[in-house]
Image (cartoon, rainbow, N blue to C red; front, top):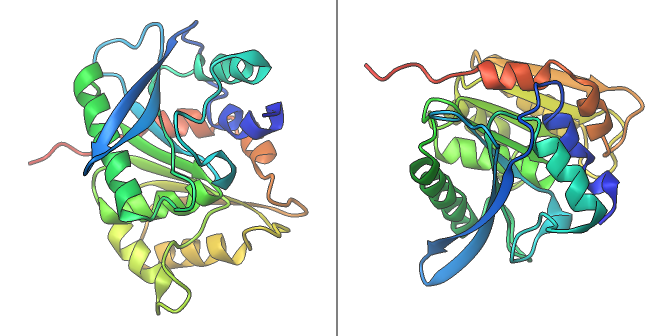
Length: 247
């Protein structure tokens, strides 16, 4: 895969102090009788109770065995980006032919997250969910199914995962997500995922008093991650979010 495929990771993982290295681990999450591979990038100096960023990929990376390349130029590029973040990066992989909104995929993501929390002694108050395109839809799907689980959300050229025939398909998601901090990105000229998807999600969040940022880029298409790459405030903002202590 070319470097452009991974530039969205660069956008999410830029503008922070590098952790100097790290390693990529492969694990499995069992859902029913099926094992699903996922990957975890562990920074060289995670420190006690590191945060976790769950990254949901786009439709082109569906498959099995882990979507992050283990060798070659793309692998070197992505690992360089990953090494910049003082956080665990959880990289689940959606199976071919389904979407992140599939109940089995949702369960797989949450099982992988729970396992990652335990294995690496992660900070349960600093769990973040991010995704691009199909993964941007997945952000809203997973967050709505598990309200209060994530400290912040980042949806890049995504939209409501509910079917078009479902009334108030954005309001239902916004009401479930509530005031979870979110940052929404979209290109105004996106011909793959219409910008109306993110506009309506932002409007629905505003209507329910949501805590969100919305960045729309005129003249930009589906490859909005180039603009995300320039948003140097993104990672500091994301890593600053924390769930309130449970009473």
